[in-house]
Length: 299
Image (cartoon, rainbow, N blue to C red):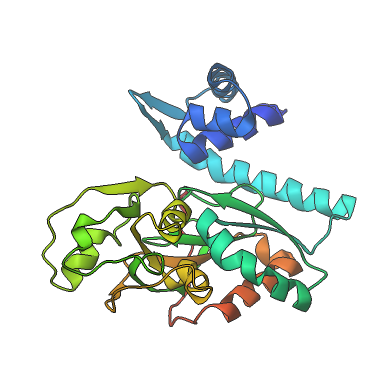
């Protein structure tokens, strides 16, 4: 049994590598080189006397020791964060919020003035993602996640379900008969797709070429500029429709496979501002009859 602890930097590198299951991802997060990450992990493994990762071709997996050690390290960092806030008198109403870029721009941003008016003492720090993260970012108290299913590692509740439909600029000429000859755009890696929307209303679909983007924001911008049609849903498109920048040329709306979920970190309940913001988000989106998932004990 060693009487000292490994360097804090090694532990932070281990947590980042375990979160991404990638030395490259950890290096990007920590602004380090991949070789430096690899060396720090080797040093930590040498200190502990056992491997933390199984290094397979193009795949990184946690060993049993790594799976056991990871929640201990994460809880230690949370304890340090709480203690540091207590000592420094950090604002209890400063809240780090994480959500995808399109939701932040098209839904959250237009409503922030309302939140500010109601809660002027709460300071929001908003961080955006292009892709669904593996889990909440370090330090985030609240996340609004657009996902097929909720995460298992933190408290999760269904926030909002929606229906999706094509949108285009006013004056853009299109019918169901000509739809597949028009420029079509979509966000990649989603089940709420053009083919599924067509299938939902028994429309013959011939798999026309579709331009994909990593975020709905690009697709909506193209459509608003008159460049074609894209799929959207009310949470991200209703404001643009109300402003007259987009229209929904067809009546059919299909239920989305994905939904919006509210994720709360373990520290959220200890941060008054996070509780206030989470309750405000719930009040702004239609409530859903859904019980919060029980956090998994496996990380």
